[in-house]
Image (cartoon, rainbow, N blue to C red; front, side, top):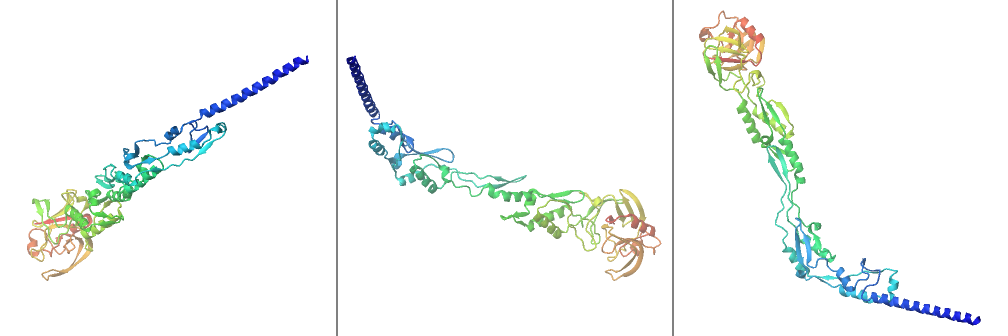
Length: 478
């Protein structure tokens, strides 16, 4: 029994020894197999510059750290097209193989098991070499494009001023892009975007630069100055207005006096009726022409100097004005205008007026084309100092119990009073009652005419005083 026990014990010991030997053999086999597996390769958990190179050969690592584009560098221009420069053209070179090989040679293959449980990290620094002068010359001679920058500009149309925007062309500064390309190569960046270097020169004048000026120009362009001529209006705006001014760079405005004067003169020529001959359909003589005279003052006469000053101020303000009346001459007593309701393009007498036929010595008062009064009169004696001049006059002043005292160019003096005085000229001619006369009409005026006034009966003088409005034209003719 004891012999059997001893035999079993021997067997157990033998088995244990055998197992131990087999484990040892397995461990050594695994170790050497693993070491053999990593021979020529980097151990597990090996990193270079943050890149996992585990189980890679030095050649594979060199390839992964090589240049992405073996042909050279590419530079994307502003328009999206690419400039390509081969490495060989500027002697580009780099040596990374020996650095990788050194890292491999220095690793301990025997520690491959240890490498399974910890990271091994390397920072690899390698230098590249190239000829900067050749690179610079290549950049200078590259095709960067031929489109020139275009400045923004102000354009004018019938509707005002607009900005023609600036155009970014291919204008660039090689001395800005070249250092940037070099810095990219030094950082091992080979796909380069030129615009990132800010090498392109911007147009000298941009839309932003011109916006305030365009706004100011349009402010004036859209200004409307509307002149009122009773039967029509004349609007100054747009280009016609802009022709009269200059807007400076600081947005101050200069009014061209000569051009403003020319514009006002144009209005005067078009709308003035003072001191002009007029076509007239008379009661007895038919169609005639009424001449001008120094005594007859009727019609519109623009005071050009004052209207120029008025317009100049309106232009400076750049504020639209409606129904502006030009400034008409005034001698302190008399406004050189006419009857507004009578004013048309071709006439300023209308159908309400006093008509005096100096040849027939007749007077008619027409109101809206209807005769309201007809009578005989006595006009001025036919001498140079007393003759009543033909022309279109205007009733502008009335008075009762009016004293008529004066001396004419012939030295003749008079001093008398009338009950109803209706003045038709600032030189002292009036329509008035002449109670000292017993008769009117005929040829009395030739031998015993007035000193230039229109004499009439008391009732006629009163009618005119009571019924004929101010500014009514008084047409006299022979």
